[in-house]
Amino acid sequence: MIRLHRLDLSDEAEKDLLDLKANITDVGSARKRSARALFNRARQANLFQKKVISTLSGMNGRSQRCFYCLSDRGSAVDHYRPIDDDPDAAFNWDNYILACSVCNSSEKNKAFPVDEAGKPTLLNPVDVDPHAYLPLNKIGEFLWFDEETDETPEVKRVRSVNNATLKYLGLNEYQDLIHERGSAWVMIETLLPMLTRNTDQRAAEIKKMLTESPLVLSVLAFMVHIYSNHSEPLEYLGERLYRAIADCPETQKWVDPELRSRPEEHRIMQELCGKRCVDVQTTGDDHCIHFEEDISVSTRASNAPEAKGKKLLHAYNRKGKVVFQFHGLELVAPPSHWTIGPRPDSEI
Image 1 (cartoon, rainbow, N blue to C red):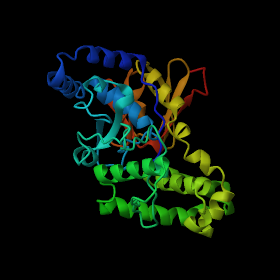
Image 2 (image 1 turned 45 degrees about the vertical axis):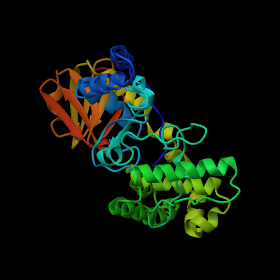
Image 3 (image 1 turned 135 degrees about the vertical axis):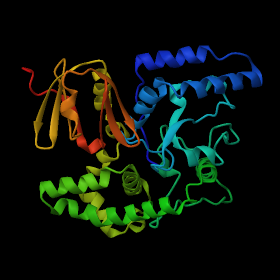
Image 4 (image 1 turned 30 degrees about the horizontal axis):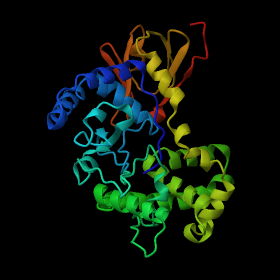
């Protein structure tokens, strides 16, 4: 897991959710069935496919990965607080996360564990920093906290969250993800010390390798958390990693959830919808798409020149790719092959 920053949903999408919520009927168990039936119908519509999922993906650096395990095994809108627990939260934007089919259909499913005070014990990475509750070892396993005698309320709370999250999400049950996290640890341990000893170009390449994958970045975020908060960070990380983080303070910015969510970029993508492409300029593999109102998008999608004269219908994320959908045309490329920002040439 890695801490995420919740973006604002568009006013139109918020209104759509409020309208759906107003259509929930009945009381008691019938209200739960009504809410679930409405949600099952709604998630197949453009509201969820183009607006909700797109905005949720933007919270994780435009990557459509599971918020819990960070796998790319396909993600769908999940309710942090299940519909059966609170049917009125079925259409609450703050209750939505992306979850893979494994995390959403394992023990978590309809479960919503709470502690003695009634506070949720299942980690929601949008709300809190997960690294205080889920320590990681070098082989990629999350550590389980055992009950201790004479626990303080704070220690008991941390243990409860740790135990419930590992139990209900099964984060240590899949060897492929354990291996990926362990490999990420080795990669960071190897590359981060090289960052300050290389040219600017090579340093930029190293940064991209360490930040492009949400799973690798989550391991780096845990290391930065240990460096900043652990009582003995040098012992936990080892001297090589400890010195590398000390020499590279910009890692704090790399893992910052608000910077990672690229809210400005996401806002521009949504504002472009409905606007017409007025020109496409090509240089090598790069295509600069100029829209009305002096906004440009650069992409390496090979069919970008076909967008000239077409209106952009939707801009969203699909299976880890950024999709710009025009009438009769889709431009699809990974996030690293898109640059979104103000149009540099306003004369076109």
